[in-house]
Image (cartoon, rainbow over all chains, first blue to last red; front, side, top):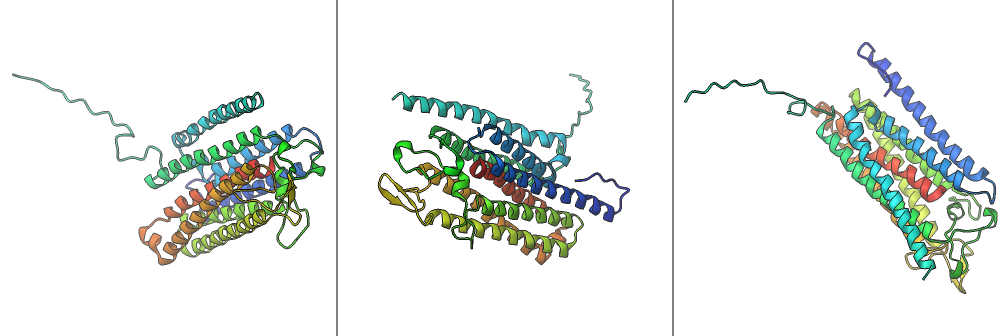
Length: 112
Length: 251
């Protein structure tokens, strides 16, 4: 979690870890509150596209902190990080392919 | 026949055995690989939701004037914050997304107590592990109870219901849906239900781990690593909820 080395006492290690836990918890809570503020403060009738981009970005921030600190992936070997994260790139393609397909279906129904 | 063979010193790499190239135990690695496959399942469900929503007409008009679709000729997708706006004990009060926000907070907190249990396990402090595991289990069960309430409200619907094509409809099930197109209800049941099943199995795993901690199984084994593995699964369930919250409730 936090930086610590062999010279530190168990108490110091525990304190360093606790600091990280508190920090990440605060970030997760604050980001969720920011999402709520955006959801309610967004003006009526304005385009929702920028809002949705903000939501996705904030979600990725939260997901990053959970994976990196809570699931401890940020402190594993480079190889393990790569093995876990690389396959998820395929999801980007799934997203593009399915949305393209969905658009084609809509067009097909409209021109029935 | 004479032959002189010189044996080369074998090249030893860290992949030849006796070492852990990823500096993680077998159990932890397999948990990670399982979670990657599970991430694909959840991502497929959420992407399918997005595609189906994209294939339906969107609500046009100011958000404040939103009503559930009353005609199947203009069968638009509902705005989630207008569907999930109830709070237990506050009947008839419009509290958009407040309950689901509370649920998110409960799940994040139970993830935090899990981190603390793992940390206590690294110090082999049995009493602390017991305490934090118990809090994690309580958090999980509370979340499930909240979800049961939310499902119940979703199924029973609002007081007024909606009149669509001259037919009065209350709530949603797999045949009719007050809130909009049928697939909205189907996806709600499937995605939050699939996540709820994950939370349920997570709670069961945590209870088994808690039992083993109390019985001293890990103390005897000399390592509390099982808590880390259970913790990975529990954090993943929290992680999935972060995405469900955004793509099902916020967007």
